Image 1: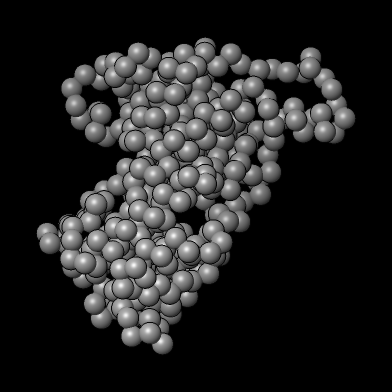
Image 2: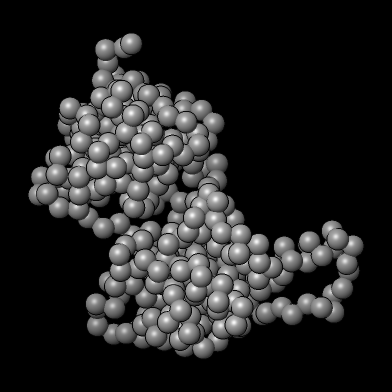
Length: 338
């Protein structure tokens, strides 16, 4: 076994770890990689306990408080992604270690995915592809939408929300209403951010939008944001789009709203219960589902793996991280926006 200090990679849902290994070994660290499939929290704890790493890198796997407390000298935990809900951030901070992520590696991909889902729902791409493959050529059954006539609400106006709004307003001529806690804390609700993009409250989005896109981070405040009460307040039978975290939607409430016709459908890249989400949600013909891939492209994955590895090395060399999500010197954790 090498005597060099180690970095543990809990999981890597891509074949091989050449990118990570090259960066870390060049800096004098050995990489110990877990499986491609997401391990359990207990399996992560066992991997960490067996290797005593200076750093932990994780994609989907849970890095628990116990895992964080195991290494003798933990310096940094890196999220290979954006959201931090699978890392015990307070425990990392209490140990005096950094939490880092890559907040902007997939802005184009996720915002493209939202646009693609909206187009699919309103232009019937997958629906009619399946019909034709089943031998049904029935153009008279089409009930499609003019995309330029649609009003879209975006809840969560970070990098991805902003890119999505720009693509919809500039590219398709949609009216876009956006909100975030930051936007609503500034003066001038209903102010125009750019042509076609205006700040709005959640109530206005519920009242006026043909689609509602969830782009906010998962917090205790946003958990089950889309529930019975939220959906009952929607006036235009909107399409619900989720590219954030599955637990922002109450699955049972979503099914009830679909059954009652309160909403027209859903387009979900994330579903609570993944990777085995409830069949009563994903099997419906009025629900479009992709398996948490909105972030993915050849370019985004390469960028993610390279940049998180480099930031881990930065911290292990005693330098400040490029993308800190907490401040161990102050004992505080920072929120991250998706």
